Image (cartoon, rainbow, N blue to C red):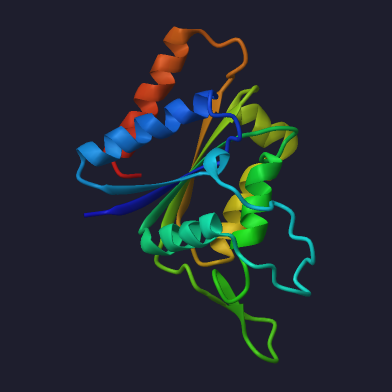
Length: 192
């Protein structure tokens, strides 16, 4: 049985991203996967890494649960919108607070190298946009994907990391949204 943790990075519980999460989860469950959810909009934590890496902040109980859910999983599914080319501040704050040295990676003493503590896990980023995915890649270089995929997940050992773009969300019709949800459901069924 594949263990999947779905991280929903949208701060608005009424957003289309919640439907995306539900569609993926239903598909994965139908294929026998075990699912855990990390829903940032329902969590209570300080998203500001107040001291950078000079001093460790106490981790709130919601963050401790999230760390357990990430470490438990074989596969991580990240669902978030793209705002101003990047991820929402809440998602960035979550990453800052959870992807810490000694938890997700470990620097080696007297070395520029590090141990990737999430090695063996895979991931899929499903991101919603108000522009076509190809335009986001070609015009802007997909900064939110690069940050999450390369600078966070792969840095910590997660590989491969697949990406699916959904958009143009703004002014989309219900019929188009239904097609996107069917596509995401199929991703869940395929356990990708």
